[in-house]
Length: 241
Ligand code: XBP
Ligand code: MG
Image 1 (spheres, rainbow, N blue to C red):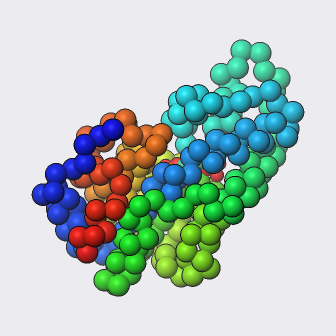
Image 2 (spheres, rainbow, N blue to C red):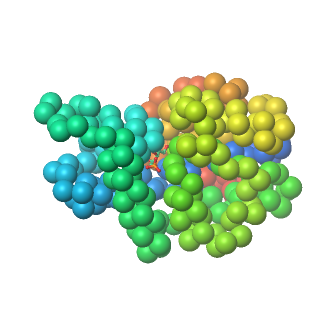
């Protein structure tokens, strides 16, 4: 367990958030602890496809270095000593099953927004700040999560949404963040990125956007030295208004 940031740092983080023209949120690990559901959904897809693969938490933690579900499957396959060929079409099919099952899991309501997220979104809206999403995850996953958590209005809450398959290179490349800056017509320094992983931190930093980290289950021990602030979650931030 990491000690929470001192009160002065928390005030500075709140000030950074308040002054921003736009807040840009990562999804997995930041808005909700979704990675465990992703892991279960991958395993379900492997089982339904007749593949004797099972990703336990330790294996998955390591595989999360590879961003993007299809890329993660490809990377795991490449590590197997004697694996039959796995075509792009097979990977796409596995990923389709995984995505559908992930939506079913989210629909059960087992994955609420993380502490402080709803308050922070509401406070930003009431201040007239713009909201954006910069994620590696598939578009359907964002919809599944946010419709369950915020209702159908979630689409109007966010001005810009850029997902992994919308850009050429996924995080840690800066593509999703650069695309968001273009669409928002804002300078990097007018925005704050809220992320949970080193890959996300690198992506936003390469776009020169200041980063606030909210530590999550799988990435809590990542190197966040380049982040402006590192918090255990966003709950105390919301309360500072
Ligand atoms: C999230 C991811 C995603 C999800 C799975 O990274 O890496 O790949 O694990 O989503 P970040 P898909 O939070 O940095 O955006 O299977 O839809 O790719
Ligand atoms: Mg994340």
